[in-house]
Amino acid sequence: MSIHCNSPSFIAKFCPPQALAARVANLPRPLVLTNGCFDILHRGHVTYLARARALGAALIVALNTDDSVRRLGKGTDRPLNPLEDRLAVVAALESVDLVTWFEEDTPLACILDARPDVLVKGGDWPVEAIVGAPEVRGWGGSVHSIPFEVARSTSALIERIRKAGTGGE
Image (cartoon, rainbow, N blue to C red):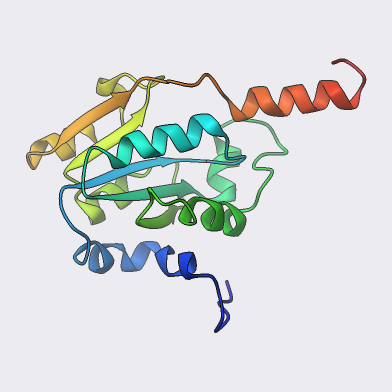
């Protein structure tokens, strides 16, 4: 990933996984962490991220890499946007303080490196199923499943676009 001298300021929010522990030390607490694909950013995503950020003083978003997204079974054409683009869009959000990524199937390594005070996922995740919940609770943190306020889905959006392209909508 190349960064130019006159890059937008949000590029400074990019954090390689190996630098996460060091970068987190400079963030205010309580620290909130969430993760996901964030392939095509929509109103549901930005509302969710704003709600997550409101639970603490700083928000870290860990993104699945392209290979990690493909392993989730969302379709062979996913993600539509490559990691570098998804990093930029998420980092540009006011609610996000740092954005990192993970190659594994789960964000557990990022969670262990960041040691967030608050771990968050969307309302489709029961708290007991959230990866890293036992670890975060073990060091005194809290885990939340934020209910959806705006019913939006990247998969549903892609399906609508496909139908429109074939005259189905």
